[in-house]
Picture 1 (cartoon, helix red, strand yellow):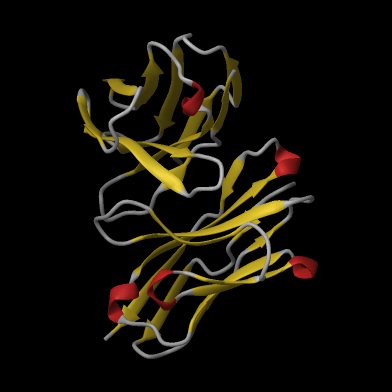
Picture 2 (cartoon, chains in turn red, yellow; picture 1 turned 180 degrees about the vertical axis):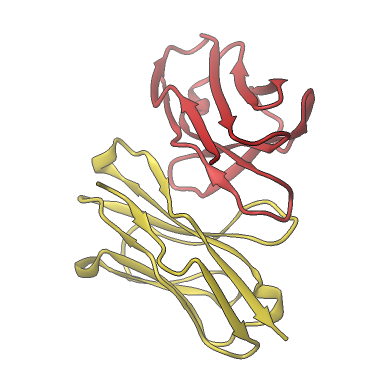
Amino acid sequence: SQTIHQWPATLVQPVGSPLSLECTVEGTSNPNLYWYRQAAGRGLQLLFYSIGIGQISSEVPQNLSASRPQDRQFILSSKKLLLSDSGFYLCAWRRSLNEKLFFGSGTQLSVL
Amino acid sequence: AQSVSQHNHHVILSEAASLELGCNYSYGGTVNLFWYVQYPGQHLQLLLKYFSGDPLVKGIKGFEAEFIKSKFSFNLRKPSVQWSDTAEYFCAVNSENTGNQFYFGTGTSLTVIP
């Protein structure tokens, strides 16, 4: 069976510090991978998605970047965090565009 | 264990039929509730949300949901479905008791037959 792992669950970082959130999927190959953000009072916002290794599409220009160094690994990064980067980050995967989405457990990021 | 439950995994309806998708949660305290939809080949988008106030929430495309606190439920409804409503529907909960983590149900696949 397929599983998705996302860590850490919570993170408190000072403004200007770097960020690295990791997401891995097990039990499948060549998944479509996604990073979403839930900001306070809003719905989920798609940040990045990837249909293959090294293929990243950005939906919203911002202070963040994403990388896919391996088939089942998706990393969300920032060189210098801003206060506005605070929020809940969710990783997700699916086999193809027409199939169901599966979510990780999320990371609550607080930038102070 | 705390969870978000969507009991209907796959629903098939004819056009013009009424829809109700169940969502129950087990988190205590103040909760924010959401319904998301994923149309075939598209990304996830927000249908509606409940934060406070009127427990009957109106969303896009004629959808509505009712928050019943005593039943820990937030069921999604639409009086008359269309073929274009064929999609995957996700219920989600955000609770202060869980450190503001955001939890999704497993989703309900809706197929509307023309």
